[in-house]
Image (cartoon, rainbow, N blue to C red):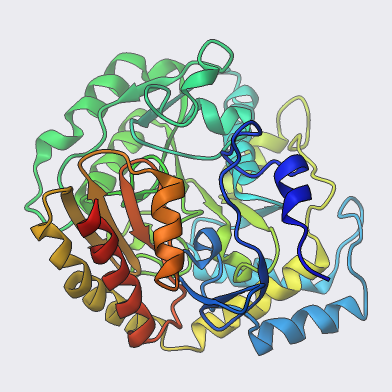
Length: 423
């Protein structure tokens, strides 16, 4: 049976797509390795790892097996009043891998919800201390998800959520760090945040930030010293620091977690995307015993959140398998190799008049155009060249699976150059 594209176009609402003028959708029949196989048999090298989640690629034997084994036992059971080994094993792994202060794990079902959970933890923490605080602080160009609280701490001006101004809670924003990852550190970078916190710290529950790499807000890569300075400021004012590592966790930047570039420990950590190797939706929010116990000593006596699919056994089982597969692989060498090839392969784009910047860190490569690209037009050109790359705004970027071959990555890089050279 062929994929019904007409019904899809008339009834399915795809992300960030108009129902009046839907963008073209390409029918995927299957996927394997680092390739998507379209219904007509064309194979596209996947430069997106399905929005950065499929870090091992597709049809991974160990992950398939984990799902099948768990499916033979139970697919789901409520987490209220019940528990199971896949969730326990997953939390053991996360506690062991993350900074030592993070000892309490809350499992949810998506990255955006993990951020909601983190923000609620911070709010309940201060309520329990008898000092209710309703504000958060962050930097511009950030993105933390599409649910309401997550939108409220994403850049409200010119960002993806500008439409919702006036409906979202209003928080404190300051200029994002400007010093690039590989430039000499400029201490003036932290001045906007220093000024903001000096003035407003008594009303702020936490500072939230994407460590090292700002994702969908602009794919900006900044200096680790900024994180160190931010951690010191939070300590100075007694504020919680939330690290949103949904996009950067599990090796994407060359470290297992991006906070390791600055050797800092956040008070709350959000994980998602690569957690299950892209097999199922799952996320986790980790915090310290001090924060957890403070929350539970408040009037509520508990943390007030409980997703229906919290601790889903299928997702936890495949997350366990994905983490084991990652840790037992030469992932650091693979990511370093990808970084070197991206540096070399994308540098040629700097010779094009249409390109403003090229930046690379780990398995992340970004080509920034001088003006926004026509998504439908550029997508079609990429598909013609046998690659799957989905730009947004001015940004044409790659976040491939770590298992990608040199030839596949070269094909992605050369496709970007060829397409941008024609614009």
